[in-house]
Amino acid sequence: MAKSHVKMTINGKPVEALVEPRTLLIHFLREQLGLTGPHIGCETTHCGACTVDLDGKSVKACTIFAVQADGGEMLTIEGMANPDGSLHVLQETFREHHGLQCGYCTPGMITRAHRLLQENKDPSESEIRHGIAGNLCRCTGYQNIVKAIQAAAAKLNGREFKEAAE
Ligand code: FES
Ligand code: FES
Image 1 (cartoon, protein in one colour):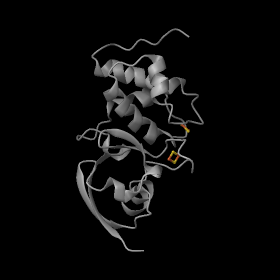
Image 2: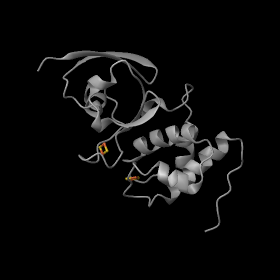
Image 3: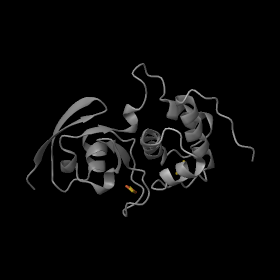
Image 4: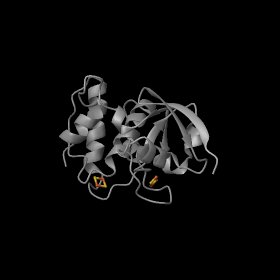
């Protein structure tokens, strides 16, 4: 199949490549670019394990062709850590609050949470749950993911995070 030339910025770096029009963005990222953090958990666009940030939106990379991201600006989990190598606040709070177990959903979950906190700087618990409804997790039961996102929001808003009594 004839290949198309695409150019985009991924995690701050310019990328140019030839891709088949049918190549899904998730396969382009994982197989052509070696960015294997975003995962594939379904074939029906439910799980969100493939979530990346594209032009300021959370996008399920399994449901967009790589050619559609031509000219775009993308962030994947690999680009989340700070330039000095320290963890992004969300990566840190997911670790602190045990927001992951197998880790398979985590790249998509954190990338989504990152965009969520830009859409809503101080979300309530129900807004967080609703905000990550496109991301499934088999392991955590979500509770600690919610806490991790609340803790990140508190840090970003210069507040101390207090866990609600259970
Ligand atoms: S792999 Fe499940 S939504 Fe993309
Ligand atoms: S940590 Fe295993 S699927 Fe979420």
